[in-house]
Amino acid sequence: MEQLLDKISTNSILILVMIVLEMICVPIFLHFYWPDRTYKSFTMKTVSSIIFILCGIFSAQLCYVLNTEFFHGATFNFFKFTGNMLDYPRYIILGLIFGMLGDVVLHKLKPNNLSFIIGMLLFLAGHIFYIMAFDVAKGDFVYDKAETVGKIIISIGVAFVIAILATSIITKKIKGREPVLAAAAIYGVVLFTMVSKAVSAAMTFVEYSEPGVSSPWGNLFYATASHDPRPGWMITGQKLLGGCESWQIASVVIVVGALLFITSDLLLGFMIAREKGFNKAPKRSLRIINIYTYYVAQIVLALSILVIPLGFEWVEDIYPMLGFYS
Image 1 (cartoon, rainbow, N blue to C red):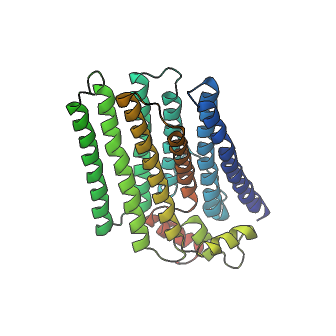
Image 2: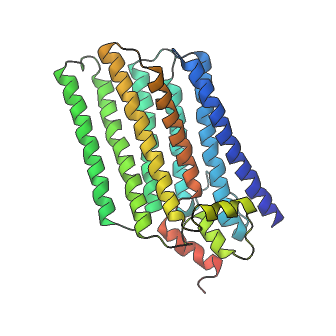
Image 3: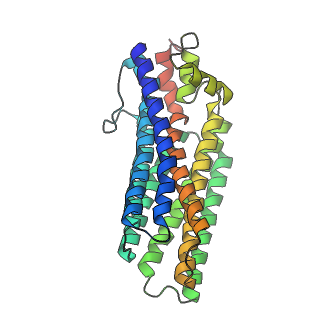
C-alpha cells in the first residue's frame, strides 16, 4: 500500500509540475515570438509542446496505477497493447505527439507551402487519434440525439470549408496555393469531425451515466471506500467535483478541450487570411489568444485521461476484479 501511495503521489506531483512549467514556458515563447519567429521562440515552442505530451504520459501512468496496480501490480507501458482499457490514454498521447510534431514543422524560421502542408497533415493525424479516442470512450452505446448533434457539427464544418474555397476561387486568391487550400480543406473537415465526436461522446456520457461506475476516480473510490489509498486532498477534491459523478466532469473536460482547439485553429486561419489576403500583420492580442487557447486545449485533453470513462465495456471488465460480481 505504501508503494502504491508513493506512485500516486509521484505521478500527481509530476502532472502538477508539467502544468506549472507550461504556464511558465508559454509566456516566454510568446515573448520571443513577437514580432516574428526566432530560434529562441522555436526552442520554447518545442519545449512547451513536449510538456503537454509529458502531462499526458504522467496522467496515463496515474490512471493505470489507480486502476491496475491496485489489483495486479502492473505498470503502464505505452507500447504494450493490453486491450480497450488503455486505448483512450494511448490515442490521446498519440494525438499530443503529432500535435508537437506539427508545432515543430509549422514554426520553421522560413516557412513555405511544403512545410505548411506537412504541418497540417501532422495535426490532421493528431485529430484522427483524438477521434479514435472519443470513439473508444463512448464504447458501443449509440445515443440518437448525440449522433444527430455530431452530424450537424460536421455539416457546419463542411459548409464552412466550402464557403472558404468558394471565396478563394471567386476572389482569385487560389492561384499558386491550390495544394495549401486542399490540405486546409481536408484538415478543416477532420477538425470539425473531432469536435462533433467530443460533443457526441459527452452527451452519451451524461445520458448513460451511473454514479461510481465510470472513471479511474469513481471506481477506485467505490471499490475501496473504507481504505481509499489516495491522499486526502485527492479524495476531498473528488468530493468537491461532485463525488463519483465523474461522467459529468469528463463531458465538460473533453468538450472544453475540443472547443478551445477549434477556437485556436479558426483564429489562426483568420490571421493567416488577413495577412495573405490583405497584407496586414497579425495583431499581438490575437496571436496571444491563439497560442493560449491551443496550449490550454492540449493540456485539457491530456488531463482528460484522468476523468474519462475508459469505454463502457471497461466497467464490465473491472467489476469482477472489484468483487461486485461473483
